[in-house]
Image (cartoon, rainbow, N blue to C red; front, side, top):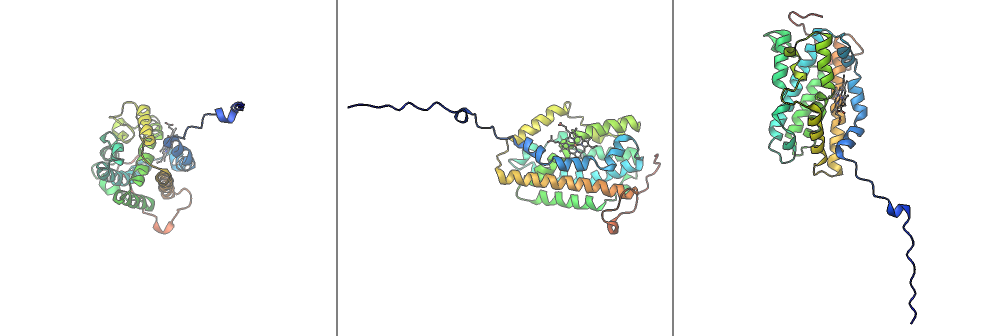
Amino acid sequence: MTITTTAAAPPTEADLAVPPAPVPFSELLRTRTRSGHGTSSRASFMSDLMRGTCSRDDLVRLLAQYWHVYGALEQAAVIAAAHPVAGAFVTDRLTRLPSLEADLGHLVGPAWRDHLAAVPATVEYVDRLQKAAGSSSPTAFVAHHYTRYLGDLSGGQHIGRALRLRYGLPDEATSFFTFDAIADPTAFKDEYRARLDSLPWGEADQEAVVTEVLHAYDLNARLLAELDAERGLGPSPDPGAAVRPVAVAGAAS
Ligand code: HEM
C-alpha cells in the first residue's frame, strides 16, 4: 500500500493575521458622538465665555440652567445608585448641585432662587432626565451621566480656569468647575472609560447609549443657543417660547 501525503500549503498572510481587537465602547462612544460635541462646544455662548466677553448675568443664566439640569440628573443618580450596572457610575465625588448653589449665592446674593428661570431647552432636558430616571433600562441614565460629568472633567476644567483668569472670579464663585473630591481628573476619566468598557451590554444597548448622548449634546447646544437668543445673538430657536431676561442684583459686566 502506498501512502501519499499532501504537503500542507504554507499559511498565507491572511491566515496569520491577528483578528482586529474589538473597539472599546468608550472609544466607539467618543468617535460616534464627536460631531455632537463639536456643535455644543462651538456654541457662541461657550466661545464668548472662554474669551472673557460674557457678562456676569450671562454666567448666572448658564448656572441657573445647570441648576435645573443637575437637580434632575442627581435625582436620577439617587435612583440609579441601586441598579446593579448603572450604580457603578454613581459617586458623591461628582455631585454638583451644592457647588452650583454656592456659586449662584456668591454671584447673585441671597435671593439667587429668584433668578432660576429656565429656557425651553432646559425644561425639555429636565423632562428627558426624569424619563431616564423612570426607565427600566439604565442606558439613558448612563448616557446623560457621561455627557455632563465627563464634559465637566474635560472642557469644564478649561472653562473654570478662563472664568478665574479672564473675569477675576474667585474660587467661591466657580466651584461648579472644580471637583474637590477628584484630585486627578485624567485618572478619574480613565477609570470611568474602563467602567464603560466593562459594561455587559450588547450592540443594541450600546447603540441606545450613543443615540441618547447625541440627544444630550443636542439639548446642550439648544440650551446655549437659547441663552444666546436672550443676549440678542442669533435667532431665537423658538421665539414664542423665549423667557424674559433675568436681571441680576449687583451684576457687573
Ligand atoms: C468651551 C466648550 C468646550 C470645550 C473647550 C471642550 C473641550 C473638551 C476637550 C479638550 C475634551 C477632551 C478631553 C479628554 O480627552 O480627556 C472634551 C471631552 C468631552 N467633552 Fe467637551 N468641551 C466643551 C464643551 C462641552 C459641552 C457643552 C459638552 C456637553 C455637555 C461637552 C462634553 C464632553 C464630553 C462628554 C467629553 C468626553 C469625551 C470622551 O472622551 O469620551 N463638552 N471636551
